[in-house]
Length: 88
Image (cartoon, rainbow, N blue to C red; front, side, top):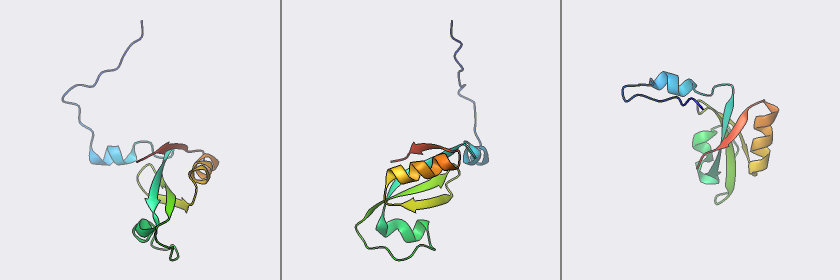
């Protein structure tokens, strides 16, 4: 028989613990519009409006890279030994 872990109603995860969940293991690939880039990557050069881009973020939300292809973001995560997951 397979043992199943259960979560009780009183279980609480602190905001700090949640922020560190997956740290060093997981990276998030998120589609972004070029208009949103300055807020995520202030050091990025000006980018034409209306473009679909992809941002790679660390588990804690820290931006890692910006690219024009989902595949490049995933490849970068793998090169850093991170498991890439998609965020919509």
